[in-house]
Amino acid sequence: MPTALIIGASRGIGHELARQYRADGWRVIATARQAHDLAQLTQLGAEAHALDVTDAEAIAGLAWKLDDERIDAAWLVAGLYGPRTDGFPTQDDFDAVMHTNVLAAMRLLPIVAPLVAGTRGKLGVLSSRMGSIGARNGTTGSLYRASKAALNSVLRDTALTFGPQGATCIAFHPGWVQTDMGGASAAISVEDSVRDLRATLARATLDANGTFLNHDGDPIAW
Ligand code: NDP
Image (cartoon, rainbow, N blue to C red; front, side, top):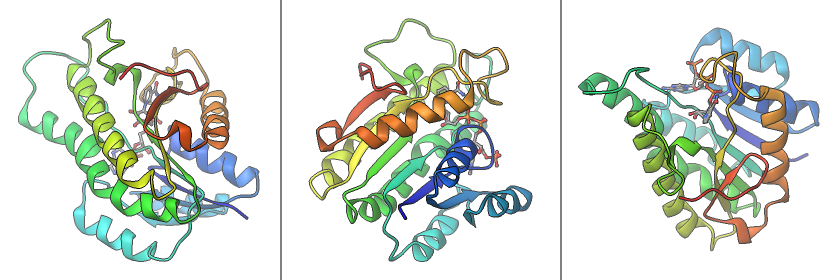
């Protein structure tokens, strides 16, 4: 039975990833930060671990728990949009968005990628087209955009380090998805986005290591 690890599975895209992998008979290890979300994940049949991705000690605890795991598919999903208004960012907004979307990835990916390399597996991070510099045609959400551009840089470093060890590491845009973050008028359902994300990750080979892909597999400019 293959094993999936999903970091940030309380709701939205992460929760749907956990649900679909379980429905397909995978073993699922999933994280959330609230007790009631952990209980829901356990009810789904997942092995649930508490994790706030901004908590360095909690990350060290997770690393210890995952020590000899072999992960076939890992997803770093937890993310924060931050302020819905643009302009002078407060220190608190900057820290919250950058710590959740960037610092957490810098800490978690070096822990997760070796577990994936051990199975010659795949690792996806939930980036966003809004983080693309090459394809940028708007400026709303500039703090979020900057954080996802930085996340893409972290993903490229991860791919350079762990690709040669066998891990296929990819940054994904999930589409504009109907979740709390995307809102009810978003373009696609969470079920369809996650079905695409899983299929695209499943068919990716090491040639795709270090790429930035739309949920359907189309490449996106960095
Ligand atoms: P949601 O806002 O619906 O869910 C966000 C998830 O991130 C929740 O599970 C939340 O947990 C978790 N999270 C946030 N901060 C932390 C933290 N400090 N520690 C642990 N978990 C945390 O977002 P989506 O499901 O829509 O988005 C998932 C990912 O996809 C994000 O990275 C997002 O940037 C990206 N994305 C989404 C798009 C969309 O249209 N929806 C478009 C492009 C990218 P909790 O419930 O505890 O708050």
